[in-house]
Amino acid sequence: MPNTTSAPPKKKARQRILDAAAESFQLLGYDRTTTQAIAAKAGVAEVTLFRQFGDKQTLFKSVIQQIGGGVNFEMLETHLSGNLEADLLLISQHALRFFIDQQDAIRMLMFESVHFPEMKAALAQNPSGMIALLMRYFDKQRDAGKVQIADSQITAQAFMSMIFGYAIGMNPISDLLPAQISVEKMRAEFVRIFLATLKPTNQ
Amino acid sequence: MPNTTSAPPKKKARQRILDAAAESFQLLGYDRTTTQAIAAKAGVAEVTLFRQFGDKQTLFKSVIQQIGGGVNFEMLETHLSGNLEADLLLISQHALRFFIDQQDAIRMLMFESVHFPEMKAALAQNPSGMIALLMRYFDKQRDAGKVQIADSQITAQAFMSMIFGYAIGMNPISDLLPAQISVEKMRAEFVRIFLATLKPTNQ
DNA sequence: TCAAAATGTAAGTGAGCACTTTCATTTTAG
DNA sequence: CTAAAATGAAAGTGCTCACTTACATTTTGA
Image (cartoon, rainbow over the protein chains, first blue to last red):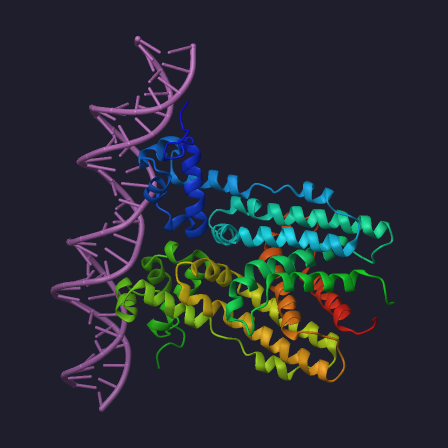
């Protein structure tokens, strides 16, 4: 019975390397991450890394597959009530949390995509999954006559642009803006804005 | 009378180095840009680069100052008519054009800011300038009773988030989304969305 | 238990790259 | 025109880093 109270958590070396590599690659990017540093953080010999993955690029691409993996939007979708405001609040909450949690990885992927074009797909996966979810939701709400909407993709893209732009662009520089505004306040505003567009009150 | 029809445009070596460095740094980032490549692109000897700037980091920071320089929003501000829709269209046009033109530089700055925290300011300069402009505009419109607005900074931030998120996040992956939607269509939608929020038609 | 597979240690190799040095050549300015 | 300043050519230095090799040790699984 190995690994009950021993100091180093005895996960398989391969996975420890992947975890350490992910952490370093996400923050520092490909070039500033050294195989030596990954091995040290993973608590393995550097040569083990090369025996497992061959070379640094292969390890990098393995890491991307792991972190670029899609999130379970289906579970979120089952929690939608049909109440427009509540649902938009829920969707924006999940999307904001995801983008803010993953902001290092996203920044890195956006940058490295110039040099590794294959990983543009990994970068696009989650945003486009969220847009698809929003489109299904908007279409359903429109068919139920609850919202006024011309093109659900345009609206969904606009919504995701706002969420993404705030999480990746504005929030990280919020300390340099006139006043600090909490994520919750911004999220409430996002929902308020889209309710005004979607609700067929006027016209 | 030098440089009338001669092949290499005889700008000063220092400026040619800065231009070549900017081009390479913007696309490839700090690490993947070599001083050798900069010198070759600038058409100077590598040693000239070191004599002019001392080292690579100093050159890099000089480049950032040059490309991070603020844009003249004041000129844009004088062109605002007072008509909400026309003004939002104009502002969004300029902002979108700027962010899309500078997307390589912005991606690079977002990434390198982790390693060079000083340049977060250069990154924030233009977005926060645009937010400030929008705030002034919204406040003026509110005082004139033309729009209904609670906190102009929140609204301005939301608007800029949407523009930024589209230009930097969604537009570059638009080929991986359900259908291609033009920048113009998205811009029109952005304005439509904010008109609905700002116009005090209901309530 | 025991052979095979995985991991560790240690030393080294070779390439890329920032940066220097020396000396020759060109450009600029008074 | 001429001295000084700027630029170039070429060779080299030293460091980092990905990756290899050879051999010892540990872990695993039947």
